[in-house]
Length: 194
Image (cartoon, rainbow, N blue to C red; front, side, top):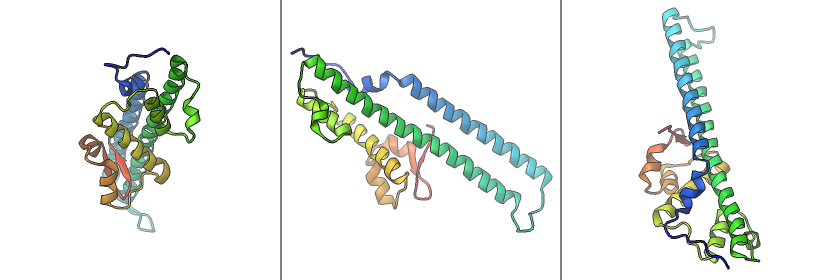
């Protein structure tokens, strides 16, 4: 049986590294859209401030319109960020599964990751453990991995809805980076570009 030397090998970084440039390009596209929307918003506000039109017969003013317009722009960007997060997690899960399938052949195993039953990332982690490969390989990587999947599950199963602050704290744990990048707004996860 061939043994791969995993000493000094960071499996988590390897999983992401192969497509990191794609992810950075997607983030750049989202940032460009957000910037364009900001410019469009500022131009429209300037136009309305100059013209100062009267409210329509229902009392709907240009300020009301801008509030709605800004909300639609924010929601568009949040949909893009949420899709991005789900896509990264989906990619990581797929890469981990492919790695397990490759290692089955490399190690000459008859037992496959698919023999473990239910799917998901835990199946792949369990299979790696069976092969003698510790993954996640550090408490920090495990914590980051667990956080990523909790956020992914919230997005997929609850569309980012958070019922209260306690639920938000339980979701993010004590990860200060996540607390900087993910906030709540109107009981919903809200992602920043940082």
